[in-house]
Image 1 (cartoon, helix red, strand yellow):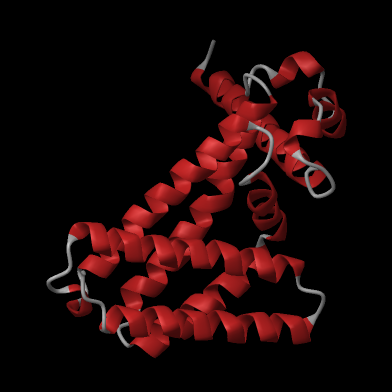
Image 2: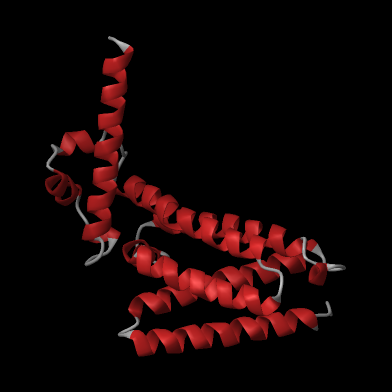
Length: 208
């Protein structure tokens, strides 16, 4: 088999895998992963059910891949905000704007995470938890490098990072359920006030 033929087959395999993920994500707009059947996904893509197993072990495996896809881009967005801004108000405004923009660009991904974080598929719940833990570690690393964290224990910095991550997920979930522009503005305003409260607490935190 020539390298050119192998390259074409690998490209086709990637294309089919992406099509299965896209189809799964679209179908999950209206139902939970635990109720979604493999044949529903392959029917949308136009491949035989047997072809599914060349890419995923089962529907839970597809769900785990969607978790990585859904949360991976949010990591990049928030890391960029933390890296580029220095003033607390700029970080707060930038973070809320970044989350709102992410929800607008990737509504199906956000809805999937919001629904499956406490859903019925254990492997997917665990994958979401693991991704959010890694996300928390990344945020903790960024926070720990800031002057405000001088003298803080690693445990307290990680606790603070967890608050930020939980808040981001909660805010993204609220944005996805917003009924219109006015409600989105209200959600954004509430998110900023909550982040300011966390920031204020951070400035006056003393480990008791």
